Amino acid sequence: MDLTTDDRRMLDGEHGEGTALAMRVLVGVGEAFDAPHLVDVSRTHVALSNQEADTWFAKRLADGGARARVAPTVNPGFSIDYFEAHTDLPKAARAHMQLTHETYKKLGARLTYNCTPYLELNIPRQGEILAFSESSATPFVNSVWGARTNRESSQSALCSAVTGRTPLYGLLLDENRHGETVVDVQADLKDEFDYHLLGYVVPGRIGAQAPVFTGIPRTVSPEGLMNLGAQLNTAGAVSMYHIVGVTPEAPTLEAALGGREPTARVTVVDEDLAAQREALSEPAGDIDFVMLGCPHLTVRQVSDIARALAGRALKAELWICTSFATRDLLERMGLLAMIEAAGGHVCPDTCIDQPCWHHLSGKRGMTDSPKCAYYASMRGMRFALGRLSECVDAAMEGRTK
Amino acid sequence: MTGSEVRFACRGIVHGLSQGTVLRSSDGICFYLVEPESGVMTEKGHPIIGKSVAGTVLVFPTGKGSSVVQLDGLYQLVKHGVAPRAMVVESPDTVLVACAVIMEIPLVTAVDPTFYDRVPDGREVAVDADEGWLAIR
Image (cartoon, rainbow over all chains, first blue to last red; front, side, top):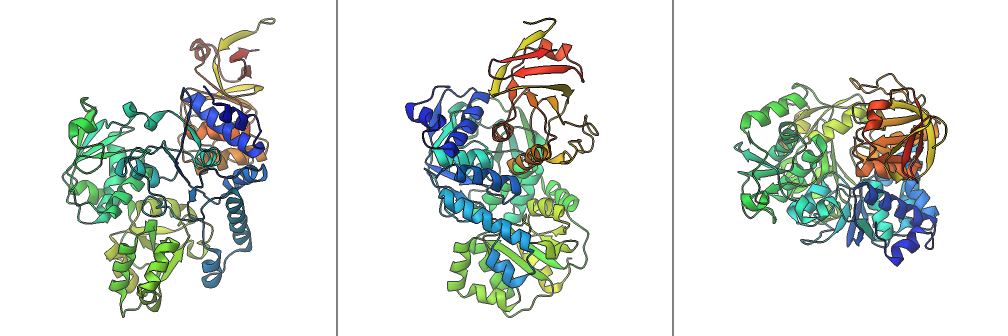
């Protein structure tokens, strides 16, 4: 791979061992994909996980003197303040989150702790070259914004943040951005929950192909697109999709396919979505809690919840994960108080897959997100699956229908 | 070439010299599903379930699983001294390559196809990712 003088200096350690390590990772990835050279990135997002190895690697970079040239936004860990105030937070979990926080602060990251940077604080324009990790973020910035990123690992994205560079390969190149399989959606997409289900259904039907959707309405909400990408990239490894007439690289079906014939055509109907929901969901019955916010809920979604809860009381615990910015906005609008008056929690900076949830382990809950059900099940929680409105009803009733 | 050694050309992706016994897997590897203390594969239905990757030259098609779990898996194996000594991969993915660089495990690809016909499990193989060759000892 051809390296510039500056790339070479970074690789040779002139900017410190941390930056050299970051460059070694990027050169390794570039070699594996036959990239001719590295290119500049204008934005980065790191799927910080707060797991042992993730923090260990970030600390190696930071202790080696690395500082971000292109400051990344970062995924949620958990809010120490919130969980200390409201739960019996284990000391080890607290200490590790504190170490993660100090490490990323030292690296110069923007400590947004939010998994929807593409909706706030890190929004690219069409054609920008990025290094974004995080399963809901990669498809959104590629597909909806028409920016360009590969399906980065949290480590490779962090290396790009440090060096400001990424190898030129894959989805950065025009010829790799076309769709391959046509997915004709005949199912009735009533609200953003149906996009969760659609995203979870499709990879099993089309394998490792880039989908081109037809039949999705132009009025699809940002939340619908957020959920679609999150599930496509959880049930499969879809980093880019097209929606004919909606996403910028799909003005027509022919354009989305790059003038080629599709490798296959599949149709998704109401029964497919219903069957997926059935397959992922626990049977109806009593629940202990409702968990929402995978990906982080938007201000519109939490506003809907607040209005539904006005003057009511909860029978099951309600945990809503969202960004600090959304939470602040809700507080100003008086909506946070409505949720808290009903007994609900709105946690900033927190992911459903973190060691702060031990108080819910072994319990039965409800969520709107298949991704939440998938990850949190590894922490001993079981879930029924339903629309946001059904989840809120279930929290008030203490049972699912 | 020395003695009875047979060499195969390959492309070094993550540099270094290493040696170990070959363990072949026809399925992708997620290191999170390998037991951290023993290096034994635990993934249900996996072709190398019950076998240990410790000290091997691991020959497999590709990595699988998210970056979070793949790095944590490999990190735990290195920490417990039961990681593979080198990886021979048909289609290296971004996550796997990043993990191999970070954990300093040599990784090669694009191996001379005759290697796959001639190397059964348990053979001692040397890997030179810097010069770009594999050798059966």
